[in-house]
Image 1: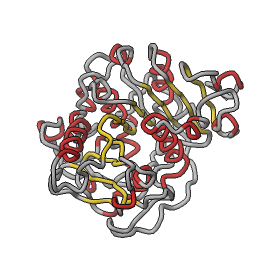
Image 2 (image 1 turned 60 degrees about the vertical axis):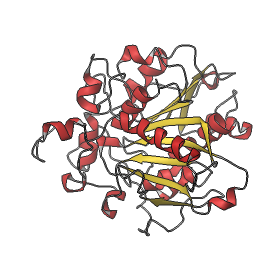
Image 3 (image 1 turned 90 degrees about the horizontal axis):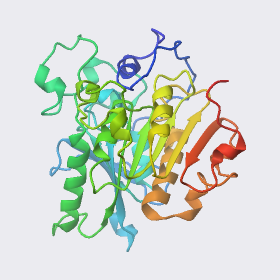
Length: 350
C-alpha cells in the first residue's frame, strides 16, 4: 500500500483478511468529512435524526439512536451491533455512517467508548486508538504503542455484549428503550477487522443478518483470534452461517476484495449479496457526509432484512435491481430471487 495512506489503513491491511499479496491500492480523492458537531447534535438524512451518546449502562460502547424516541410512535427499533475497522476501541470512528443508519429507525451500537473528535476524520494514529477492551489481545499483551502489526484492541464478543445489553434494556422499566426495540431483529456488521468479528458474532442464534464491509474471513485456521479476537471467523466457519449476508468492498485492488469474494462463494443456502464500488479503496465512504453511498446501501439492506421493507429490497433483487443500474457498482447475489449477476455488471477484473 502507498506510504501516503493514513496509518489506520496501514493497520487495516493486516486485519482485512487478504488472501494473497496484490498490487498497491490506489489513492482516491474524497470529499472532506462534515464539520464536527457535538454528540447531541442530531445527524443523518432519515426521518428520525440521530444522536451519539455514551450510555452509563454500557460504558464500553457508543450508542446511536433517534434523538426523539417519542416520535417513533408504535415503530420499534431493530438492533445493529457494529465492529470498527483496525480493531479500534473507539466508538465514534464510524460516526457519520452509524448516525445515518440510526436516523432511519435503528438502534446502532459500536464497540468502544466515544474517543477524541479527531477519530471521526480521515486519518488517525496510535494516539487516537483508545484503550484496549478488557479481554482483547491488545489488553492481554500490553505491547508498546509502536509495535506493528497491532493485536486487536476489541473482540467479537463486544458485538454480542451490545446485543445482550439492548435486549435487557427493552425489558427494563425506566429504560428509554423500554418496549421500543424489536429484539427479534438483530444485525451484526463491521468494517475490516470489525467485519471478521461480525462473522464470528453472526453464529449467535439471536442474529438475523450479517454485514461484512471491506473484509472477509482468513483462510489460515485460528488467525481470526490472533488478529481480531474472533474464534469463529475461519473460512470453514463461513460455510456454517445460517443468516442472510451482505459483503461490500472497494474495487479489485482493495485489500479485502478477494477474501470478500471467496466468502460469498462459500456461503451455503442463505440469501447473500456481494457488491463492489469502483474508484473506492479500503476506506469506503464511511467518513463522507451521512456515510456516503456505503451507508445508503447498508440502510437499504437493514430496512429490508430487519423491517421487511420491499421498496428497499429493490436495491438488491431482480435483474433491474437498484445497484445494478448504477454503472460504478458491480454486483452478484444468490438466493435473493433473479440474480443481479444476470446483468453482466459483476467483473472481478477490469
